[in-house]
Image (cartoon, rainbow, N blue to C red; front, side, top):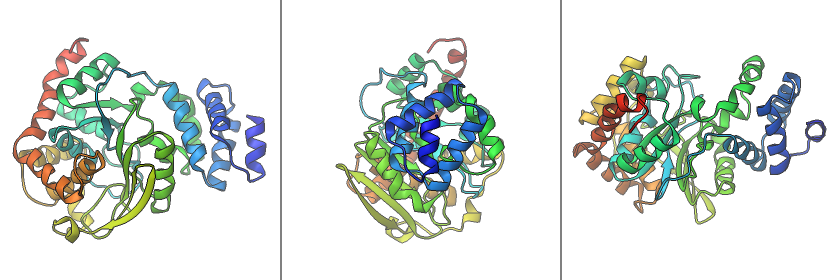
Amino acid sequence: MKSQLQKLMAGESLSIEEMKEAAGLLFTGEASDSEAGALLGLLALKGETADEIAGLVQAIREKSVPIKSVRGSVMDNCGTGGDGSKSFNISTASAFVIAGAGIKIAKHGNRSVSSQTGSADVLEHLGVALECTPEQTEELLEENNIAFLFAPYVHPGMKQVMKVRKDLRVPTIFNLIGPLTNPIELDTQLMGIYRRDKLELMGSVLKRLGRKRAVIVNGAGHMDELSLAGENHLVILDGGKLHSITLTPEEAGLPTYSLEEITGGDAERNASILMSILRGDDGPFRDTVLLNAGVGIFASGRTDTIQEGIQLAKESIDSGAAMSKLEFLIRKNGRLERGVV
C-alpha cells in the first residue's frame, strides 16, 4: 500500500493493477484503517480515473460470490443512489418491466443507504427472498428473466471497508461503483449516477469492463434516474465509442411532472407504488417507469430508439408480463428459503 499512497500524494494516478493490489489489501484486512482512509481520501482529492475505478471494481468482482452459468445476454439497471431526491424505487420497478419485455436482468441492489427505502427493503416487504445461491440465481434468470442480487450477500468482502467509509463521512470512490460490481458478467447496462460531471468517466469505465453497450444517465434535478421534470443527460456506449445526448419529456412522448410528484416513502409505501405501476395505474409513477424502462430496453440493444423502448415498456406492463415476473419471484420465495428452486 505504501507505494500507492506515495504515488497518490505526488498527485499521480494509479494503474488498474496498482489499484487492484491496493483494493486486495483493503478486502483482506491487511491494510490498516489509517491506510484505507488515506487511500480513499487521496483518490477523492485527486479525482478518480477510469483505470482506478475499473481496478477497484475488478478486485471486488474477483472476490464476489461467483455466478457463472447464465446463458444469453444479461443486463442490470442499478443506480448509484445518493441524489437525495427521496423518489420511489424507480429502477426496481423498471427492472420488472424490462424483464417483461423479454430481457434478462440481474437486479443488483441493497437496503437503504442514502435513500428512504432500498430495493432490498421493498422486495423483502413484498415477500421476495433476498439471499439466493448462485445456482438459484442462475435458474431464476433462466426461468423468469429476472433475479435479485443482494449486495451484502454477493460481496461479503465489502464488510472490511464499511467502518472506514462511515468514519470518513464524505463521498468516496465507493459511492460511484455500486452499479459496476454486479458479479454476473454483464453484456449491457443502464446505469444512473448522481454526479453529472462523472457521466463520461463512467462510460469509459464501462468500456474498460467490457460492456458491449451501455447508457449512463443523470436525470433532471440531478437524479440518478431519468426523470420527467426536465432535461436528462445521457452518455451512450456503443461499439466502443461514447456519445452524449439530452432527452426531454417531450422528446420521449411523455408528460412533464415535478420531482415532488414521484416522492416515495417507507418500504410499505414504495411497495404499494410498485404494485400500482405493474397493475397499469396511470400517472407520474407509471410514466417515470416507462421512461426508465424504455431507456433500459434501448440500452440492451433490443430497440433502435428510446421511443421504441418506451412502447415495449408499455406493452410489458399492459400485457401483465411485468407483473408476472414479480409474482414469479414472490411465489418462489418459500422454496428458495428451503434451498430449492
